[in-house]
Length: 445
Ligand code: ADP
Image (cartoon, rainbow, N blue to C red; front, side, top):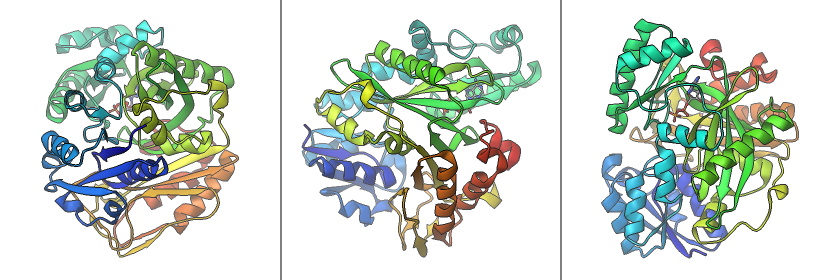
């Protein structure tokens, strides 16, 4: 078992990892930028080290700074959280070279799955259906036009190195495909330093369904069922739930088994999420693997009763999974709302500022994962997500009712947040009736 680790992240996920460490008797070293100096959650860490100024490139993305902090504080391992360096192969390799355990997959598995084109290839080899599209990277516009005319419009151009909904463009005809190709390529080059793009058939009105997997170093891999993340804005998740309310037993088993085949084929170790799109005929198509813990992991924790961060720590410390798939059950329904400091009236522009009034919700079935509190200043330098509100109840109807009352209780002032939008969505007739897909928010709000 690990005894002392460093958390290369900030905010709610850093706090979430500190808590899991302490419950396992592991010491947690936090790092912080000058913008996060004095943050109360840092006091919960066993030690905290400043790694640079507010600018992420000079702090949370500063590999030499983080490795130095790890060496000075004498930790055995680094947990990267999500975002920042979590999917950075170079960082994982440097950790390995320095004799520090990276709490995540081996670099070889990251290489196989981190690039979406490569992951599609691996999924096909694992006999998992992928969204129809290009076999590899598309170099020329002409190539994309030829393929689009073969598989039929609409199509989507996607960045091979993509993430966070960036480097993606939908095209409905030859003219829009030309510009989609060029703009996806340029956006990918700017965002990821890799402009490679590929093409997929654009699935109309799908659901986004993903499978949580944990694998150990001895070749055991188990799934923790699925999450439905169809409530999205600009291809970014806003609300997630588990179980996916439209899956029947057979489809669920097929989907979870497909996810495990991919994970095993990649000789994956630690936590991963295998993402699929589900079309209106309930056919599922692989889209990508996220090789890290995800923001929405709490909904899975609520319905399975397993602490996924603890599993990450145990597996990184060399433990193996000693129970079988039969022991993992889905109980009840969990929903998560991401609370972002954004102004819905200004097209969801980030809304930094000091929180002068903060009253979190509580009561049965409510969990709040956040690092903010009264007096906290939301920095404009980082992601706008400031809290996650999670509920767990016996049925979807009850979970919706609990989420609505919890959202109504939640006070964060005077900054603008997505609480009112989440409440509108949770109150929408089509959401309640479970008639949603990834285009729901854009069509209705
Ligand atoms: P990212 O890594 O940037 O999050 P994903 O490949 O996971 O990108 O896709 C994010 C979202 O974009 C999906 O949940 C879905 O809403 C939409 N999307 C991606 N590919 C397709 C597709 N082929 N057809 C329809 N929607 C898609």
